[in-house]
Amino acid sequence: MSYSSKNTLIFELQKDFYYFKQNEPNIIEPIKYPISISNVRPRIINWLIFLCDNFNFSIQTLYRSVIILEQYLSKLNNCNLTQEKLNLITITSLSLGTKLEEINCNYTSFFTEKILNTPQFQIYRKTDLTKMEFEILKKLNFKILYSTAIDFSNIYLKIFTLYCKNNQFLIDNFKKVNEDLLKKLLLNDMIITISQSQIAYFSFTECLNTFGINIFVLRNIENILVNSIINIPNQKDNNNKYNIKALYSL
Image (cartoon, rainbow, N blue to C red; front, side, top):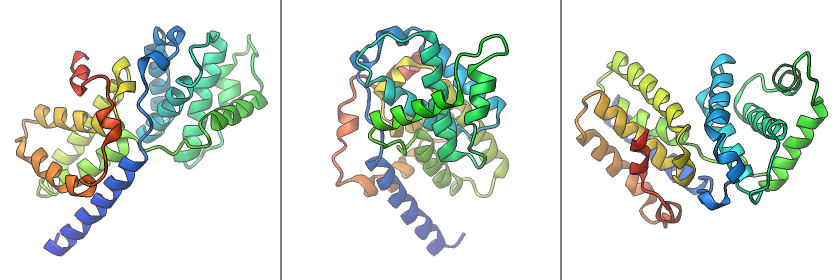
């Protein structure tokens, strides 16, 4: 890649980084997260990971679905939910995620018939899932196209490839390890208190350590991206109740 082409790419990535920082979802205070759901949260997230893996949905779909789910639950004011209702909310969040990210996005009937219901227990109809979609959209003021950790991670990875000198084997393996870690991080309850950009940053630094790559690569990437947000008040990160190091408890 020529010097001018590299500069053009970096400039575009800086603009993307600026845009994504502007559109991160709100960090959730634990007190606003329904207590009745906190205990079963790992099972819910594991279920979403399982479904996305088995249906070959992208990790972006997974993250969008989880963000929609968490943002909606945080607005329920600690109300108690039955397991059936929680299942409906979870699958509806996934349905909305697929509508945003997947090419074949009309899974409403499939999710209702094959996931929410069983041959022995017909609890929900397709219209129930559709109504729940509208309920979530209203609760979130129709804003569900949040920036995700995957958006930020992709920027880190694109800049990282500039340092790899066309080592496609390293790039592919790095991406795989990074994606696996990003999925694992979703299971940590502290994740709701940390911004999406910080999740991506943490995952990326852990992957650098895993591959034994000199940390100067990260410093150079930071220097590239900081220019795109230097004049933006980083309010969301400053409001974090918990440090990113809490993720080391995984």
